Length: 111
Image (cartoon, rainbow, N blue to C red; front, side):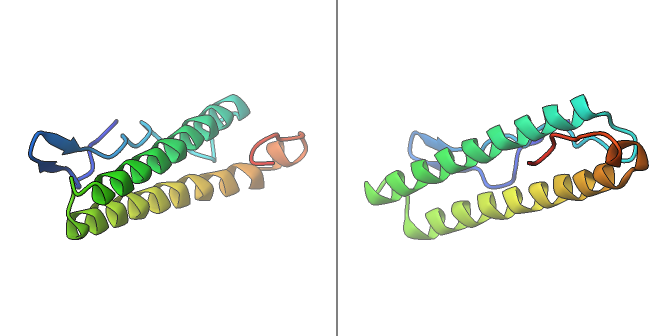
């Protein structure tokens, strides 16, 4: 399920909406390689989207469309959300890689 982060800021006509977090994290204990690889690609795209969003925030602050206080809050919220989500995904990757049926196969995940 997708959700919006709480860090939505409206300044004049501009809306600073962070990227959507990918829908779900596959459960490493039962997921197959295709599910894990698909999730890995979604999270890499999410990381790129967050990087683009952070550049937009920098530009908006530099051009005084966003205050430094709002910039710092939105930046920190986006980075915090990214780290939290990636940590949860990496925990499932570790569970996936620890399974005996996966250890014997050559997994392409996170190489």
